[in-house]
Length: 349
Image (cartoon, rainbow, N blue to C red; front, side, top):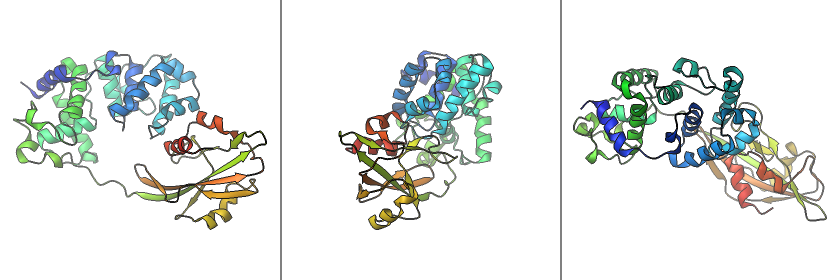
């Protein structure tokens, strides 16, 4: 049996029952693919179900505000995906009358849709013969053929795409593409692959050479940048016991664009109580009569792809009203980074 035939046979016997597999609706397939980029299936599935419930159609998503989309996305990270999701929904409604493009080339014109996503949607929804190449496919092909070319190099990206096209089963492209991705996720997994019971083990080069754990090869990542965040949480209680604080929206093109956070004082290193007590006016100029308290004595290290955020939270109790203050009960309605969400959940206002 051919490579593609073995993959198809394996898939029909082992495929998981996932909610997006019950449909070939391009909106739902697109939604699942965007959510599952850099997200495990177990983590992404609840988000997919919440999105489909909140926005049953692309029109529903297009008519929503960006804040609604970001709030629903909260906790998944890589928030540019959520912003692209919302932008693309609007494009589909405004430029395509609410109907998703049905070809690979046309899908590539959508915001946030690259080669992999366009290939997945066009093949799964419209049976177009396009080869998908995601992390799972890279792993299966590099191990099976013993390929040491880095998968994140220009040469590697081109090489694996050509190879994937040669191997694909064009007559059953929908199942084949889902099958090879599923095979990489379950059978040929990153750690502890099931080589002993693998239907490809008699011809797998990596297994024969004993280098399964060394493939695929990746070029070294960009050096991690350390940043030092000091979040200042002003708190005002009125005579009736109502509690107020303040949030601001992040602007610019950096991390967490358009999400909300407490006033931030970024520094070149960890700051102590005395320094914060002097410098807090840099970001809270209109807050007076402050009693400063340190919330966490050790920095919380929040790891992003190329950044480590060393974060401390500082409580500023004040006896005067805070400009543009927000009732603390309302802050849970704002889309915030997971770092802020965890603090809000833990802190007793």
